[in-house]
Image (cartoon, rainbow, N blue to C red; front, side):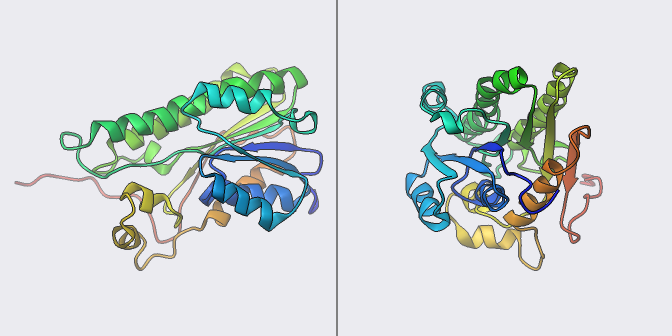
Length: 256
């Protein structure tokens, strides 16, 4: 499969205003595909439209936490963008790093509404069309936090474990179709992720990656591209990736 591997394909990318979503949108466009780039920050979407300058990009405001927003998006798609065959479920976030008994309940609820409920709603809205056309790829952005707990990861890790398990269960349900599903589980990647987690504290966010050659958003998009380019009879169920400088922590022991 050459440089135009995405030609003839239509991708819906959630969270396309920065990070993994924007990087994936750019890769699909560069490979000849069509992209519906969505997110809540309209100014970022408008900047992306100006930068790529192609009629193969359609930018639309979307809040995955609101079913009405999802319904309006899909019902309002032009015919040329209606047959979505790549769903890149990227919209998500982490908020706070406090321990469970100290965490802000509203932060927990926002993570669940976005990372779990929003992802489920978008998937449920798009999947019937893929099944009817008997083709498509669903790529769900999970995290290494789905498998490896850490202090303060509480609800964030729980939401990403849901994404991983939901992806595997989708595969079970889709057996007999040609729709593929992959859970992508990145480790440290230097995007706006930590800035959001620390609510705009760029100093705290920068300390997360200090001295580490972390992955970039485009590194993760490159991995996702490799999954999409595989022959149609191959499904990657889960794919966990980390920078070389990151590994698994030893067991924590309280010796007090």
